[in-house]
Structure formats: C-alpha cells, structure tokens
Image 1 (spheres, rainbow, N blue to C red):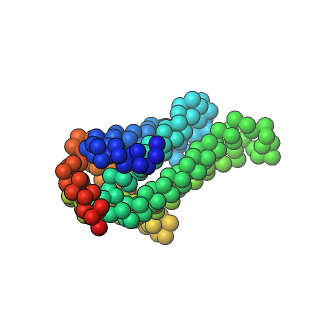
Image 2 (image 1 turned 135 degrees about the vertical axis):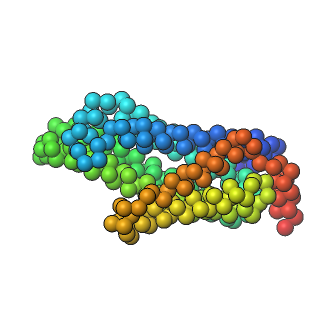
Image 3 (image 1 turned 180 degrees about the horizontal axis):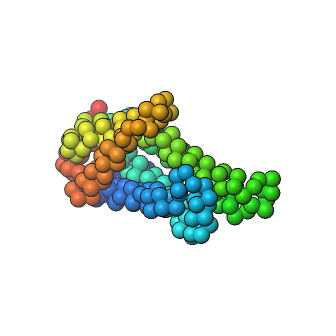
Amino acid sequence: MEMRTIRQGIEASPRLCARMAGVFYLITIGMGLFAEVGVRGQLVVRHDAAATATNIVGRESWYRSGLAADLIMLAAYIVVTVLLFVLFKPAGAKLSMLAAFFSLTGIAVLAVNCLLHVAPLLLLRHAHHLAAFETAQLHSLALFSLRLHALGYKIAGVFFGPYCIMIGCLIVRSRFLPRFIGVLMALGGLSYLAGSCALFLLPRTAAHLPDPTLLGGIAELALTIWLIVFGVNASKWQEHGVAQVAR
C-alpha cells in the first residue's frame, strides 16, 4: 500500500484509521505478551538449563508458537508505526517521521533478536552436528541464548523509549487526542529508557529495583484502548491538516 493511499484513507476517515491503528496495536501487545509470558515465561526456568531444555523439547510446538507470535507482533507494529506516522504528521511532520524511524529501528532489533529464540531449537534438536559439546553444555548454551534474547528487548527499549516520548509530545502538541494520554506515553517512554540504561549501566542496582518498564506498557495500552474506543477528534485533525498545508 502506497503512502499516498494511506494518507487519502486517513483524510477520508481519520477516526476509522485511528481505530485501525488501535486494533493493530492491540495485536502487537497481545502477541508480545503471549510470546513472552505465555510461552517463554512458561518454558524457561531461570537458573535450570536442564529443565528449560526438557520443557522446550517436550513442548516444541508450543515453543515454536512463541516465534510465530513474535513475528506477528513485529508485522503488526510496522502497521502501527506507519498509521501513527501519517496520523500525527499534521501535528509535526519532522517529529512524526523521526519517531517512525526510531520505531522501525527497534522493530529491526527485535526481528534479529528472534534468532536467539530459534537458537535453542538448533542446539537441542541438532546435537549430532555439535558432537564437541556435552549435553549439559548444550543445555547451558540454550539457556544462555534465551538470556541474550531477554537482553535484546532491553536494547530495543533504547529505540522504543524515544519513540513513545515523541508520540507523547505529538499527542500533547495536537488537540485530537487527550493530553493526559500524551503525558502518559512520554512518561512510559522515559521508563523504557530508564529500564534499558539501568540494566546496562547499573546492573547491580537494577536487579534490586522494580521493573520501570511497566509504566510504558500501561501507557501503550491506554493509547491502544483510546484509539479503538474513541479514535481521534476528526474536526480537530482536519484543522491541523489545513494549518499544515497553509504553511
């Protein structure tokens, strides 16, 4: 779908397109939670490589469903990024484009990160190609891959944090979404950045603190629900569009 076609669709019905963005955002959140909590959260035993390996091999189809969910999540997030870019362009074209670049970079990081979800399957299912390693070593490597996978999310947070902050600023600047949603998104983005920076710069301190990224999840969910239920104020969106053309 060409960007011009998307633009024309939004101009025809900005509220409908906002709701579409909300639906795809909900898919993104749902698939991400399913993969992280429903699959990896159920199969990965934090300090027990052997138990983790047994769970993955014994429930391989379930484990693979986590990869499928991750890929659906990323595809849906690309759609969200494009729709929000065009939707918020009247409020600030350059800032909206910069936000989209940060989001797409974060998505690219998570796409590469999916390889670390696949790695345990290769280690555990193709051990005959890794005869130099003992079984216990392969189990440890599998668990280590999943720990690196978790760190990949923190690296992505360095990009998704600024994305949420910029979306929050665009919401506050515009008048077609409530400003409290924008403030919440900006704070959520700061929480993503804080969580990532704390883990990499102050790992010992971060290990004893509550996860600050919870606020980011709440902010994104709040934006999602608002987009689905209320969409945007179409008349005010049109006002921003007219003002942008007049510049």
